[in-house]
Length: 336
Image (cartoon, rainbow, N blue to C red):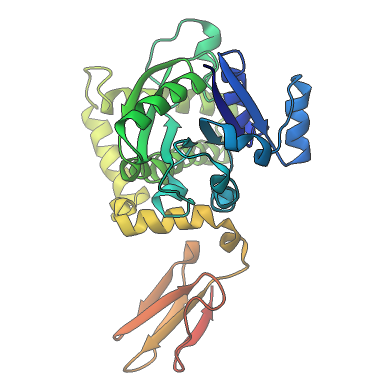
């Protein structure tokens, strides 16, 4: 008997890609989308949009292709509609890791995410080699974690995950916690920031008079070589001069405490900011300082960091929203 899959958010970027991969497979596929523009994209493919309330109760799998910031609200609405024994598939670990997914004891919950086509990997065609992100043609691995459920639930979900992210070479079974270490901590907080720094270094070279085409060619070539060295793709080591340059780079361009981003509490805090981006749009953040001896001199530093000079015993709390932290009577708010 055909299994039934419902895709929540079928008209979004990931939802559209999943739909394209699943539509010709032997499933009954239901596409759910509330946003008008996204629903139109589904219709433009000659497909119909269904209401979640009508199709989720009869689904074997429910795929949540919705933004992280919407996951809590959407799962609160949709999960109660799921039938007993159904499997929910989430496309990112953030909400699951921080406990913001509505769960049910009689349903299974699986988290998956694509690894994306690797920088060093063989592809079957020139088109596949240019498929950097969506992996429509390019081969890639995926990671899959069981958040709640049995090994049988995992096996059934992995099959669907392989199909919706096809072509998949390998599915790596990990935990939700391990997936959160990979993203956001490793891949985004460190990896994407490093990539941004490389681009800004190129822009700085151009600003200092290097021709843009020469700067781009030089930087992309000189980015690939170090990556090939440090990831073991080639046997050549860094030259002695490059080793000195790398040492200087860590001294000048890398925060010595960068590994703090992998601390469990920092990962949780990072994910909380991802799930609640409205706090990032506030004009300023309030740090409340309580000092038991004498006021500390406070100055503002780049990147909104707070520096305390001649400080005494103190404690502070970030105010991410009204009412989260009661204000001590002696505290003085400092707008950054």
